[in-house]
Length: 391
Image 1: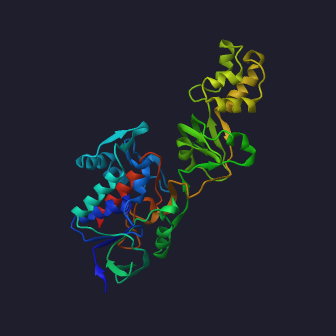
Image 2: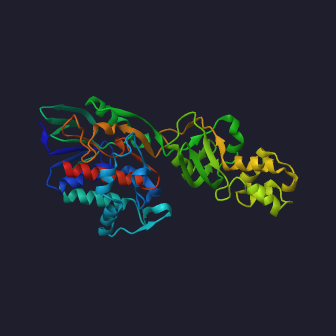
Image 3: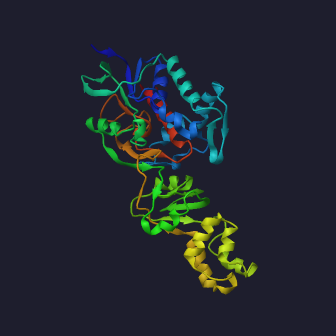
């Protein structure tokens, strides 16, 4: 025997909980189903356990999507300030880190507790440890078999995220379900993920643990943050950011001299002619990195011993040092996923499928991916809210 609801939300992450709370508080009878044993698991591990819950710099150009305009409506109607007002209403202490990133002073558990309280205010029914075994659509209703029960509703929201961090139960379930109902899927790939380097870059692997401020570039994208050398390749905020724009075979350009420029070495020859390249780089870079770069450039002696052309060439290389990654650390280490349910098949205002009435896609399940730093959570809140307003 089926239970009847106005809407069924698949997934108790940020987007799913926000959607359910919004619809529930509008008087809709909402059921949220998740196979995990507790809601909001990805929220709990985010930001080192303090949840980077939004960013003051949210703007559409800080998101990747096949349709760069799709996210404008939802982000414009439910803003970072709107979510921050909700956080303040619950007296959750927060602080701003670099680049507009907002974190809880205490624990990410406070954000999950807030969302669950919002769901309670809307009389939302939440079921966890309830694996979904079947979803069918007929006679204008969706029937979901889960944990031995059957629920049905005229509306179904796909909020199960993407395949990033599979050890937490993430999978491609959202894409399989979308395809079953005739929606197209933009091929998913890992994003905000460390990149790996081939064997010929072994010298840089010896720098594992060394971090430095750089500008990382790929195509037209560039990020000025820290890069971290690992035993497998490159990581750190600048690399995670640029990884979302990287495709196999493309080079990554690293500017090891941000703020100095390619002509810096020639200028320093006039000021400090007796200084060696190794010593000069040691003044602006970590010692091990300075030694490795100077060793690769093989300019022996002091700066005065070098021709201007050689120093200019070295400066250009240091300002755009090319690495060609041989891959990434994959979905296992990716914070999010680029790709997902094709936005061409969804309404940007309501998140509803254009050709499948009552079917919605929100959050990471959709082909909208934000930068590192709270942008993806803001998309979860905004897209969830937009769907919740429409249910």
